[in-house]
Length: 309
Image (cartoon, rainbow, N blue to C red):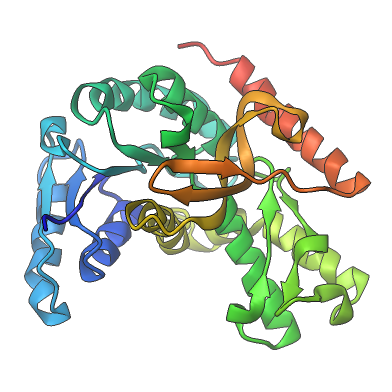
């Protein structure tokens, strides 16, 4: 049986980690595309030469030519300028939307049937632009954000309580930015609400840290942004699609009446399987969380409505 083919548009830090993990786990053959000559080819060669140690027969190639993505089952888009200290995700919009236009034109030509996961920021706007520009079905285009924000929430909760991260479940909805909505009501330790372990003040501090988690990494790195955690999360979404695992994953999906919204992308719980985003789970939110979600949606909608293609 032929292996699946995974295309990575953007050969930077995130693309590199995804390539390595996808190949070592033999999820498929990997093609790294980047505009800088030599960079994707060099990274791919370096990784491929290490595959015998992992016992993986997956092929890794690098290219500057979109035609080499032909036949990809899944595409992850990381292309764009990363955040720098003091820069918000929204500041990246004008720069990265131009890059997305070029990416979308090439996807239409070479990968019309691929499942597309967008990682580029500002996430919710970029995934909307990708789907709009490609004309791909909404269920085949989504954005990686909610899974990452939820993972950060889980990590902080587990560390504070002193339990395994495996036993912490969490869900973060809304836009991928400061207006995101970590749902305390849906955060549990092996089914037990975190309110049984933590005070209200501690929970608020964790929620606030979750909202600022990306910026915290940027401030520490000084010359880049988070790359390992986003890569791991993007690959989880790809794997759920390729293996039809039907994982319940928070991601940026296009709403069609869920949460009382329609026509826009924002972070919500979804089921990802062979059909792409097969279902959006419409959670019942308490009054405070619903108000926060509506505010987050309004911020995303304002940016999207201001787009000029």
